[in-house]
Amino acid sequence: MVKSLSLGRTMKFAVLLAIIAAADMAVSQDTILRMQRSTAALEIDSNAKHGQGISGVTTGNPGDVWHYPNSLACLLVYTDGRYVLEKRDEVTVGKPKTKLAEGSFTADEIQQLKAILGDEALKQLTTPRLPNWPDDAVALHEIESLNVQIDRGGSSQTILTVKERLKTRAMTGLDTWLDNSTPYQKTMAPLVKWFKDVEKKSKSALKDAKPQYCAPINIE
Image (cartoon, rainbow, N blue to C red; front, side, top):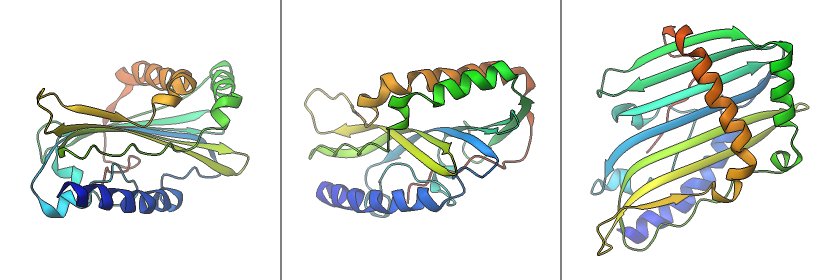
């Protein structure tokens, strides 16, 4: 079972990258940045259908994680300074709540963002390779992802980081965390902090809405 997980996961991640390249998450011509943070609490350990397809997070397709407690936050920033922040939370399975905030950044705020995006180290980043699961992994309990799409003069730079909490057969009984963003955390820290600041700033402006912008997490 565990070997099947690892093999399926490797193969599915190759498909994942192709999906991301073609999905609606891609930055449009009038968008300079799109970010989405996704989290889901899972209990996948014996279902063969799920087990063979646990590959992390995919975007752009209807996702089974709509069935799990999950949280999504996505932000779009347009060339004219406008932004849209959508948050989707499903604490109780089957009862998702979506809220939306819209606004405009000042000229200084846009310059601050462009300075962050213009960092040469950030420009060099690509999606880091997902770490291999340990041989004694038996379950995926939690998954977090950050999907960043940056317009680079008409082309799109994609950075996808995934953090997973695994149950193993280790005698300690403690779960194992895998995180492919570890080497990139210092470089991405200013952008991640900026994203969190926008969330805080927009909290009072969030209003009930229908889901439009966030892409589901897809655990097949």
